[in-house]
Image (tube, rainbow, N blue to C red; front, side, top):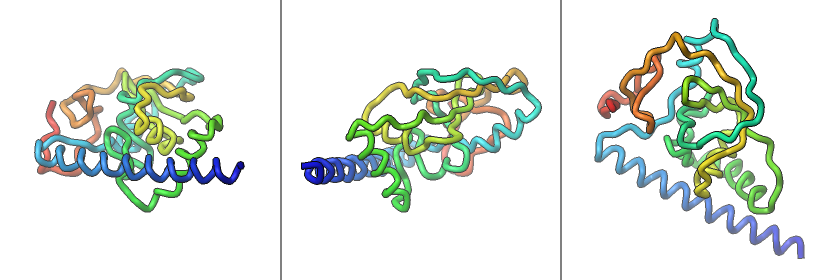
Length: 177
């Protein structure tokens, strides 16, 4: 009986992953045709500007997934909607999706809060699976960083601005708000 449930969970996780990859592909096509950015911001380039700022733990918070605009180390693996872009991570994505479907409690992601945006330090796949399933909020451990020294500028983020210190990689795509 347990094997049958596990097989169903595996099949559903595979289906969810393929659906998320197709959505990511079509989002990429639309962004290229519309000359709009669909990229996550590299957290390192933003956070390096904040090394001297105050860090403060906010504990567990409900965070709107749409406000998560960057990632530490994995910004090329997911698009701005946190859909998976690289097939080499499919096993990890599917195992998170399977655990979620089976009702396992997964540890909350760790996010940095900079202004009114968030960057992922740990938990990219958990956020991706949640986003792909239509979840609007995710419970995460949040560390707030004082961003008063940063200036808002036009950007390719879904929030319409970027944090100083980041320059888009793809200059052919308009990243202005």
